[in-house]
Image 1: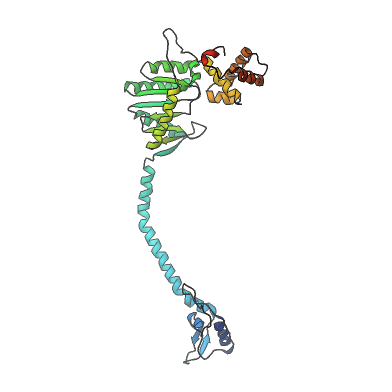
Image 2: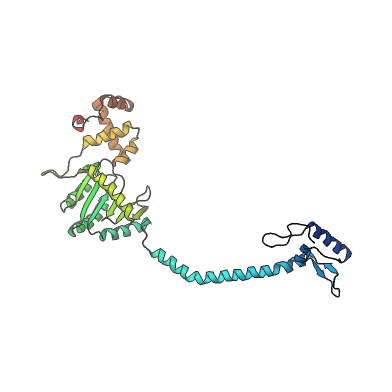
Length: 330
């Protein structure tokens, strides 16, 4: 009998005990063994009754015993693998159908790249029925872009679609953009300008929003139709709109006021906060040359000798703290 208290694992796999190993050695050395054999040897198939003998046991080579013991397990595993393959085959058609439908479904948030952007935008704008909100940072737009946008926006006005557009203050000195604004506002559109616009945004009704998906606005965009996120972006737009200045045309004047004083204050505020001319130009939608011109003009008026001295004077005199009406000379 086996003296081991644990001659098998929890899974039922037999384990060779010390007594069984010694009995097996004896059977190998003497060409067989008599007497009661340890149970572990019988369970592992390492002993068999000699032909023509009722009690004499012969030792079985371990590799043969192992094959006899594992073969049924291997056949069972093979049968299970075949069963798994059959189940997977049965589900294959449904899996293909599922992925096909998911690829064609309209997801609430989609990434558009390159040539996908304009067709999706044109489709959404064409379907706009109530209101089109846009925010266009970066200063004046190119003449070609404006020429493409004008017929579309006039057509929207003819369909009764309300249009609101946000630009930066710098468009007030950009001729092509002003000409475009004059034509669309004559058809009911509203245009306002702001010192800094959050980022480019196009909102069709209250259902679809386009925003950039990276620094290059032309390379990638996000199309958002998830209602909570759409409403959140609309709130951001409305906050910008409420802070913005309307663009209006006075009789006998083609261009609206340029807001030069306010623009110069914004340039100086960013300069005092440590921004470079290039960074200021990017944020305010103007050229670096214009930024330098504003800073140079302020230096001349305040009598500063350097950029650092200018910042000191601005802080000492409280130039940026005073109401705009008190800073008209800047």
